[in-house]
Amino acid sequence: MTIYSEEERRRLHLPGIASKIERDAEVREFIEKNLPVMTFAALGDACRERFGPERSPSSSAIHRYWKTTPEYRRARGLDDDAN
Image 1 (cartoon, one colour):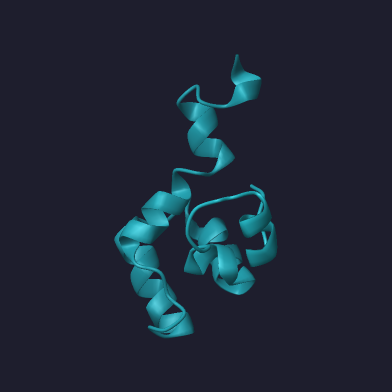
Image 2 (cartoon, helix red, strand yellow):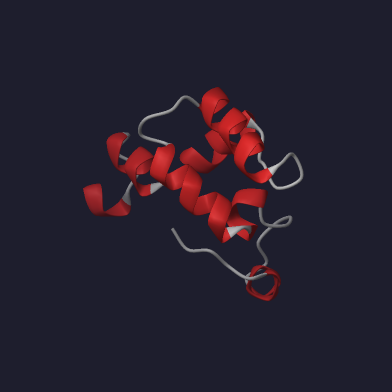
């Protein structure tokens, strides 16, 4: 997954701002490591314990992030390489 800086997001005309997960490398790494073994709710709780409420994404945000991962896209035939 490509992570863009705020400047790159503006240059590419991407909507909104990057999510907490995209902006925080440590949180992103923790989530990517634990996505295969934890539910979204449990992962949200674990993030709050580890990083505190200010840095932690909601379980809904984790789900939205998961839907952008190559594994999700490949499993659903959405990956360009799968065709």
